[in-house]
Image: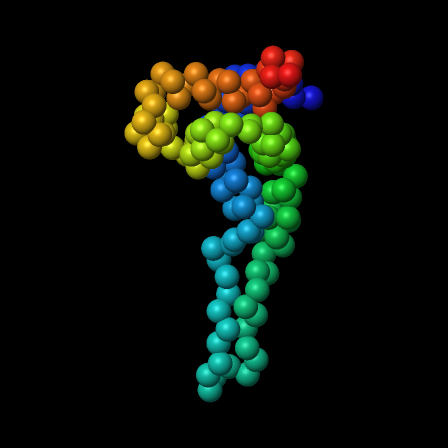
Length: 138
């Protein structure tokens, strides 16, 4: 079981765009060696245009069950289920930019805050998401 603290939530926010891309790629199930259909005078039957490698099919089918992919899905779900806790407009903007993969200095250039202020706000956002600051808000 994974316990989420503020530093873990900050790491998930930072890596969110990577997690989403990896999860999407895991679901895509690309395979580089695909057969080509051939029709010509010498071909009596067309060749298959599908993967005929049984081992590769099984490997691609089992990719969703890898612990790494499962952990990424869990982390993304944890974060997405708690995004409604962030209500301040500037915090929402900072969170969205960070989840897109921008660095704190890039976010600072966009929002006209210093990098230190961005880091402080990200910690506050992580505490909100984690539920640490809920009593202070009320």
